[in-house]
Amino acid sequence: MSDGSQRAKAKQVHARPPAALHLLTVLLTVATGAMDAICFLELGDVFASVMTGNVVLLGLAAGNADGALAVHTGVALASFGVATLLGSLTAGRHRAPSGRRVWPARTTAAFAVEATALSVFLLLWILRGPEIAGAEELVLLALAAFAMGTQSAVVNQLDVPGGSTTYITGTLTRLLSGTITRLVTGGQGGWVERWAAARLAALIAGAAGAALLVATASSMAPVLPLALLTVVIVVALLPIVRADAPPAPKTGDGARR
Image (cartoon, rainbow, N blue to C red; front, side, top):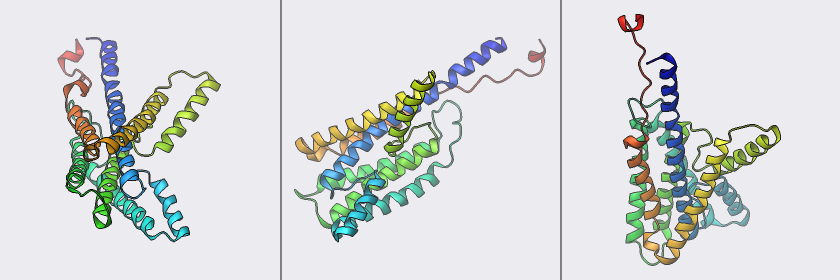
């Protein structure tokens, strides 16, 4: 095989992991929208992943002397923060995956931690009574925020351009600024903006789906984000989204021919 063919093959192979990662982040963003909708509708009008919104709500709670809202936002912020620290430690710094994996084994392990939190959330959700209140509500909120904090940290470590699944304000900013820049300069490409738009749509779809489940089949609502995360973990291990390592350069007699 010629050097030109080898370079072309290597370029083609390495084009696959980013696309796969972007697709998986879209699925994760659907899960984010679902968890935020569930928490806002059923767990005290706060968010599982939107910490900027929770900080604003904490300020409102302070201004209005709303102790309940302050406790809820405080629990969400604290749990998200702890999960972000632990998730970063579990996933480690992003490195090119060995062999044919789309991401390192430590990344899968970190997502498994998130899946565990969502599984416990689902179990407690199913076992709950008709109304959620008190400590039970705070435990569920802490689990939800912990799951989203873990996901946020892991995706951040993957270093996918514009690939955040929880910081959607940044995604919207990237989409709008990138689109305007391309229109003004006449630039080509725009793949980052296309994936950003996909994640925005995914967030809306996840929230809408979870809201519908809460209204019609409340006990099944948390199944949606857990199922999506499970799909992400499984699909990431399939050969269809793996990437071959670039061909090793020839050495010795083969290189001299």
